Image (cartoon, rainbow, N blue to C red; front, side, top):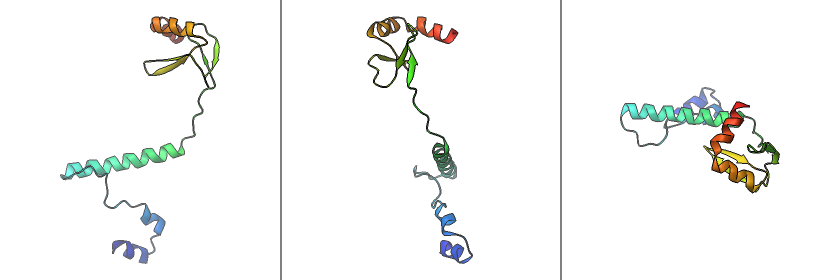
Amino acid sequence: MLRDALLAKGVSREALARVAAPAGLDIGARSPEEIALSIMAQIVERRRASQAQDAPAREAPREAVDPVCGMSVAVAGARHVAEVLGVTYTFCCAGCRSKFLAEPARFLSKAVGS
């Protein structure tokens, strides 16, 4: 009934389509505090979704520098990779990868210092 009344008053269908009813994410909220939290969570969710749509797509790097020997290595199809502390490193050969994995701190400190 409320939607029909708003349409009759001149509110556009597009504007009404953006209204969430009931408001908030379905997290089983019962208390006023929980309901408020579910509404805030929905606001954050929608804000982040719109930011993700607006952000330009980041292109993956085409080349990386081998942290052991300094050689430039093509990332696509790289056969020698390793992940340390959530960062993926690309190597020119199995030997550089093995040296890196034996003492990652040694090579990471050089990379940070340069």
